[in-house]
Amino acid sequence: MVQLSVEEVAAITNAVAAATTNKFSLETKALAEKGDAAAQVLLGYRYFTGLGVAKDFTEAAKWFRKAADQGNADAENNLSACYANGLGVPQNKTEADKWYHTALVRELKESKLKALAEQGDANAQFDF
Image (cartoon, rainbow, N blue to C red; front, side, top):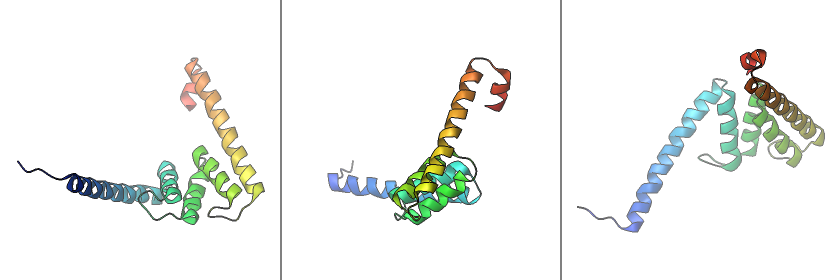
């Protein structure tokens, strides 16, 4: 049996993690480019944090905007933060407030709809 040093195990682990992250990033980007809002949010997050890609706030805001335009509340909230802090977009309190309000209203509607569906409302179950 071959025994590996701690350094060798760490190097192998890091190489596997990097390959997995890169593959995941490529798959996520492909879905995002096809218009998948959830993938767009995830790709935006990856650019925002630098997870598996070079950190790029402009790219992050671009992907958040694409998903926000499709009505994704997470993207709307993230885009609000970008505008509030001038990350990847010019700092703009009006835009930040608009996107935050849009996300909040969407989340409240979804929460109310979910509660109605759980209470047995047939229309809510159909919409949810």
